[in-house]
Image (cartoon, rainbow, N blue to C red; front, top):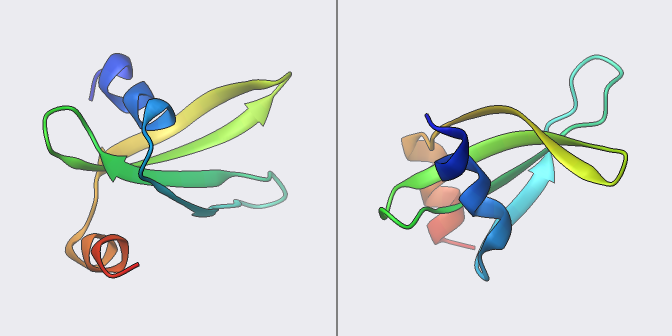
Length: 70
């Protein structure tokens, strides 16, 4: 997925976040709809007051249910 599409999740009013830590690194995830109406899950880490995207992908069916029922 293109970086531009993944970075859209940081600039939206409706989103959910959570812990996605891996090993000893503190990571978070954010999930929201893109401008193309795709529900995306982006894992990121904050470094030097900037968000570094680790991975991005379409949300799974289970993640979609959690997002829509919150």
